[in-house]
Amino acid sequence: MPAQEQSPARALEDLDAAAAEYASRAECATAAERAVLRNELARVCLPFAGRMARRYRGRGESLEDLEQVARLGLLKAIDRYDPERGSFTAYAVITISGEIKRHFRDRTWGVHVPRRIQDLSLEVGHAAMLLTTELSRAPTTAELAAQVGVSEAAVREAQESAAGYSPSSLNAPAGGEGTAEFGDLIGDPDSDLEMVDDRLTVAKLLLRLPVRERRMLAMRFYGNRTQAEIAAELGISQMHVSRMLSRSLAWLREAMLSDVPPRWEGANPAEMPGMRVAVEQVGTVLTVRVHGEVDRDTAERLRTSLRYGISTAAPGARLVIDLTAVPLVDAAGVSALLDAATTAADAEIDVVVTGAQPYVARILGVSGLRAQLR
Image (cartoon, rainbow, N blue to C red; front, top):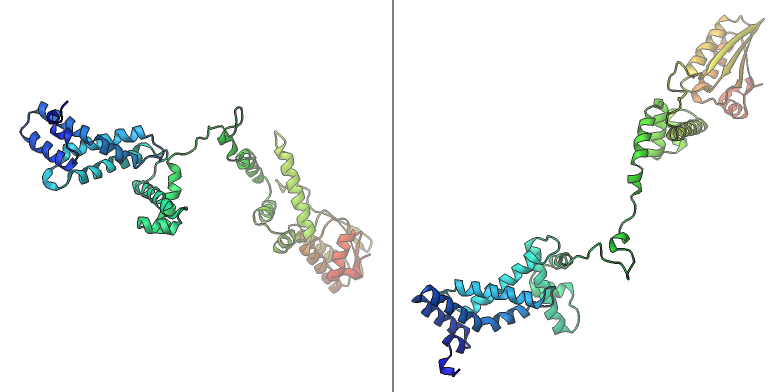
């Protein structure tokens, strides 16, 4: 076709002039004629839209998709252009760029990221490409911040958020064919989750223990207290604490492995044997036989029994305290025995402690009862 027969819009290379001619001719044209003029201007501007699309290639989207988005922005620029408001080229650049950026923001991000971060991420990526070309190396965070005009913290946030643009699939193979998926390599079995049933069971079983045993277990395993610290706070010996903790843990283990929890001997004070005191008098010898542990819970009963026996004995009699069946005596038990020795001395009654086991004998020896030990 001869050049003089070509459409004026097609022959013009100046987009501003072509757009001005389109606006003047479309003003008096019918709807059909306006559509033809619009298509002619769009064909003239297609190379320009293609150049705008190529600016954003290499960012995860195919060039064909970017060109389609750029052409859509071009049509919007043509439809909205007002010659009285300035250059068509400048307006088309803004419209097409906005359309491409909106496409990246709304259609291509694999994870939702705020719009502000998305736009900044694109700007930082574009600035990184420019600076890499200029400096022949990767730019620093400070150089990117100066180029974009934001703080270094904002640049780091944008770079971290860029990972949400195209996240890796957890179902992607971790290696060659037949290997595990990437998601199989992330995370470990949650042992705490597997122990939920056991924790609930132990919580119920703890309620079956006496208050003192529960308190000891809480101090030891939740408060991270040592046995010596527990003994000092409760006023008993460390050995006594060790025995009670061992007994409680043994019962918990047995209860955890049983369908029906075994009976705890301390659950019902009326049923538990605890400490027993037997008093026997033969002539002038009053024998008090003690069975069981003498601790803070039982020391007062021993004190009462000894005082009663002393009150019934005549002056010059002998009080024999048989501790053969006593495995443990704590501070409260020692206090009860010292009280009995003092009371007996005031009543002119001789006191003898027999059958004390080695540990008990050492406790009594250092507590002022060495003279009464036999």
